[in-house]
Image (cartoon, rainbow, N blue to C red; front, side, top):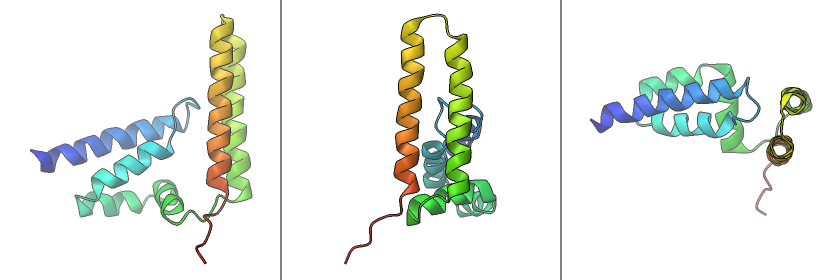
Amino acid sequence: MVKLLFPVLGFLSLGIGAVGVFLPVLPTTPFVLLAAFLFRKTPLVYDRMMKVDFFRKHVENFDKRSGLDRKVQIQSHASVWAFLIVSIILADTLWLKILLFAIGAAVSTYLRYLSKPKAKNV
């Protein structure tokens, strides 16, 4: 039962992470990392996931914390804010507009954190 549960949860998490690419309020990286964790119990599935460049980059960057390159930073911020600005314009209530802006600020802060390389211990 557990052998089946981890891959099923992994695929669910990976699917949610993939949707997060298009929905800025849904973070991609945490779901991809969760999927990688769950798939490590099933090496065949983990290896297949890591062959997909998009998912491998998320996992490797988190493991190594080598930082995001400038192009990825710009693309990430641009897509997050493009979708959020449209959502803010379409929102009817002020509290929802404020919430969307706060989510955008939190995502931008997280992206800035990921952009910086991990400090090396001396």
